[in-house]
Structure formats: C-alpha cells, structure tokens
Amino acid sequence: MITRLILVGGFLGAGKTTLLWEAAQRLARRGQRVGLITNDQAPELVDTAFLSRGDVKVAEVSGSCFCCNFQGLIDAMSNVSTEAGADVLIAEPVGSCTDLSATIVQPLKDLLGRELVVAPLSVLADPVRLTDILDGGTAGLHPSAAYIFRKQIEEADIIVVSKTDLLPLTGLEALKARVAQAYPDAGISMVSVKTGEGLDAWLDEVIVRSDAGQRLAEVDYDVYAEGEAVLGWLNATIALSGEATSWNVFAKSLLRGLSQRFDNMGAPVGHVKLMVEAGNSFLVGNLTGKSDTLSIRGLVRACSEARLIINARVQIPPEMLEEVVREVLASAGKGRIAATVVAWRCLSPGRPSPTHRYGHIVETKKEPY
Picture 1 (tube, rainbow, N blue to C red):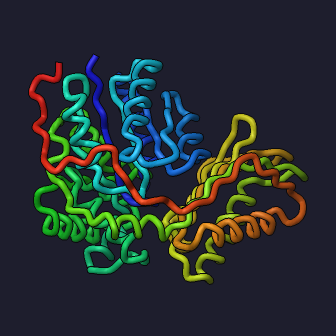
Picture 2: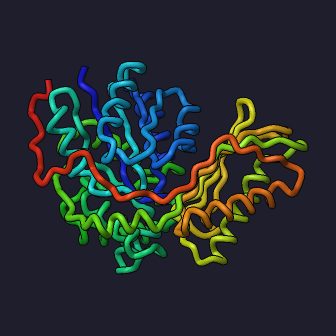
Picture 3: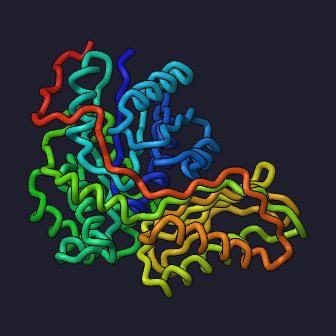
C-alpha cells in the first residue's frame, strides 16, 4: 500500500495542531484512513493528548525534532500505518524547526520514494506575525527566532496563512498579495479552522500533489541554534485535587496569570497551551502572544479532581520559566487545589544536528510503486 505524507510546518502558535485535528476529520469523511504524528523536544505533549481524543491513531516522536531523529519519524510512520491501516499520514514537526526540505522532505523522497508519496511542504503562518515579518520586523521575537520563522516560510511549497478570521477581507487580500510578491514560487492557501474557510481547497491540493520540496533554504545553523536556545521549553503533567472546581475558570485564570507575568517580564510568548481532563470531558487553552490571544475550547464541569497538561515555550531561561509556572499555578489554585507533579521537564533546546541534510532537490519518482 502506498502511503501519502502531509507535512505541516510553521512557527509556534500558528495553529498546526488545530489544523491537524480538522484535516483528519475532513479526510476521514472523504473515506481516507488517517494517522497523525506529533513531535516535540520532550514528552508530555498537549498535542498528542488532544489529538488522541479523536478517532485516529496518533504517534509521538519526542526528545528531538524529526530532522534530528529521522529514524524515529520513520518508525512512527510505520507504526501508525500498520496499526491504523492509514493511507494518509499528517505529521507536525516542532514549531521552532526549519530546514525541513533538506532534512526531511528530500531524504524521504530519496529513501522511501517507492513506498511513500510526500505532499507539498505546507507551512502555516499566523497572519499577525507574518505581517510584521513582511514589514521587516521580528514579530516580537528574538531576532534569531524570527530568523527561523522567515526560513520556514522561504522553504514552503505552500504557505498556509492561518486564522484568517482574525482579519477583515480587505486585510486578507492585501496580505495574500504581499505574500505572493515576496514568495512568488510558493502556493498560497488562506484558511480558518474556526470558520472552515479554505480548508477543503488546501486539502484538495495536498491529497493529490506530489511535488514536495521544490526549494531549499540557505540556513545558518549558528543563528538557527541560537533561535531555538533563547526559548525556555516546559512540558508538565499535574494531578489536581481539592474542592469542586470550575476547571474552565481555573484554566483561564492560569493562562491569564502567565500572560501577565510574561508581559511584565518583557518575555515574548511562542506558545503556551494546556489541557484539563476530567473523566470523558476536556478543555484546551491557548496563549500565542499577549493576553488578547488567550482562548479556551471545551468544557469540564465542576468536580474535585482533574489532570492538567501544560506546555510552554517562552523567550526566557528555562529555570525562570519553571519558577513562573510554579508560582502562577499555585496562585490559580487559591490554596484550595493541591497540585501533584506527575511529570515535569524544563529545558532549552540543544543545537540541531540533523540525521540527513541534502544539498539538492531529489526528483520525485514518477511511479512510486
């Protein structure tokens, strides 16, 4: 059986996981058997827990990015394909990773080209951050982190402008024109998971096309490494217990408290996401910048016990990030909720060292059989 891989890159907070969820549902309704693969620098990932709530098989590659653990990606693809009989795999690399064409797409075409069809590399971009980058700014990020954002866009086969519901129609048209002018060789999709706009049109492309990795970015790995290293990276799972609590109120209080602390510190937020689970119910919270980006989806009714998974990527040293999260977590509990740490990892990503790095475009095999 020939498997199709849809690789969805993009910077932290671009909306990749939400897109994966919706894409999987839509492809399933078309009769496709879909598997999902998540990726992070450490385990205890909100993305995996959230996506596993659906009806599709999910595998996680943790501990390093796909490019630095290429065999881990291959193994995850094999496991999902075997266990779920998936004919379409959608994979989401770490949001701070770039050079995907050289380190993932070209090797896959070369080494697995007769059993795998790789769809055009899609790279998601938040419209607000993208606009600032096009203006020559850094989108509030460290210059080296903004460098990663730019390189992600440069290597895209399809630039997917996400969250289009945030801009008026005139603003979207102007942004699309600017993207087309800046990156004339890339396709452009304008999508909103919230409204559904553009999703089917994007899927129509990636489910049939096989012209993946048509460009290679020139990436300075010293700048790339610095762009990742400036981010503190926290993944934690925490058991919550105490008085009957409205977990939606708790989650909003926690995210708002974190946002205020990071704002006061002048620390740019790459992404803070959390998931609260109690029985069969769950909610997901997101913070992708300042407090106006805070969102909560789902509902967990008041009860005395819940599980919290929190992932934070913030431009501060990991030890400082750990201190802030612990303090705000205690404050959100207001002395009525006991927080027992099940797993806690806080780190700064190491220098990327890809398994493969191709310096040329691998021709797509005409007959991958």
